[in-house]
Length: 214
Image 1 (cartoon, rainbow, N blue to C red):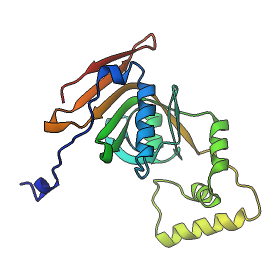
Image 2: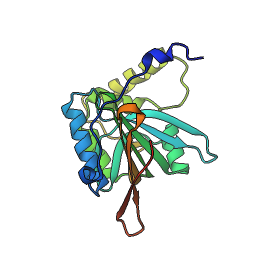
Image 3: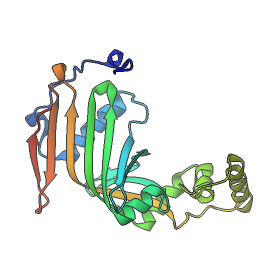
C-alpha cells in the first residue's frame, strides 16, 4: 500500500510558533518568515504554488514566482491568456502556498486576484533579461503548438523582428496581484503536534487570529 513511502517519513523539530511571537499582523510575520527562508539559502524561496479554479469549479495548480508583495497583496507575472490567467479572470478566488522544508514551515494565503497597474508591469518588464521578454512575446502560453521546433522558430522570428529595437511589453502579459483575505502559518513540530495560526481579514480591515489543531 505504501509503495516505499514509509521510508520518506521525517520528524519535524522546528521551533514553537507562539501567539506572542507571531504578533497580530500577518504581513509582518510573512516578512520575517520569508527573510528567514532567504537567509537559510533555500533555493527559489520565492517559489509558490498558485491554485486556481475554473468558473465551474475545476481546480488546477502550478508553481509561480513571487515578484513583489506589500499590504496590498502578492504579485506574480504571466500571460493573461494562459490557463491561470483565464481562470482568474472568470473566478478571481485564488490560493498561494509557500513550502520551505529546511525550516519545516509553510504559509497558505487565500484571496482575490486582479491585474496590477500597466505601468507596474511595464517597469518590471524593463528589468527582465531580453531573452525572457522575447519568450513572453513569442510564446502563446498554454495554447497548443505543433512541435518544439515550431516554438524555437517562433522565438527566432521575434528575435529577428526586434533586433536592434527596444522591446515593448505585450498587452496580454503582465502582473497579477492576490489581495490576501486569509493566512495560515504552519510550523512543523515533534510528534505531529504542529503549530497552525490562522489570520482572517475582517470587514473593517483588521485581522482576527486563532490557533488550529494540527
